[in-house]
Length: 300
Image (cartoon, rainbow, N blue to C red; front, side, top):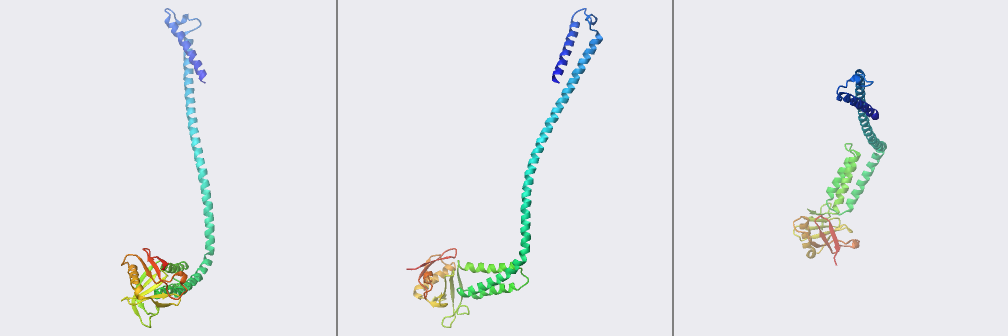
């Protein structure tokens, strides 16, 4: 198409040169040009101009077509990118749907087994309560009334229809957590030695302070510090200790438990693990730290 346009432009230029030559030669008229009449020259010029206009129009159509092709190509590439993204997205959605279907299946299976699980939770909770109650009776005799009251309340809730099986189980586990904390803490509390939960001394009650060191030892000291006792796990009785040797150290430990004195190493009548079966406590050193835990070493 471009060659045709150039050829037409060349013909038109030649015709214009002939016309210009005729006009440039004096006395020369169109009638003197051999074989060329004025009318024919006008026709040729008009034909050349029409071909040039047609060529220009064709070129414009070609340019428009090229622009449309470029636009369509860009649109095609953009659509391809979108299709690739949608394919990746659809694949991810398919995996999510598969996972959700598996989850729904597991939930449906759990719902089917819920009734069976609920029937097993209640007997297990009751068994755990019985075991915890037995453990408290065999443990150091501190706060027995309070701990037994908590068990009785949870046991009462087990027979109530106001609580779900999950809530009943939670209450039992909470009691276990409370009992577990006693193993890693120290505590001081005032009370009477000689109540039903703490066997008396010679049948008499004594007012004083109790000191619990984890579950390693339970000590008692009267208010005047004249009487110091330690609970013997083997005989399950209170046993007297040397007032001159332990009176001050037990009093210091009680003040530390109250946070009335700085923490320090002290000597307390605690039975060492290797000699726990022997009658009576051994001399042991116990360090009370800020977390409430105790570290015990047998004294030489």
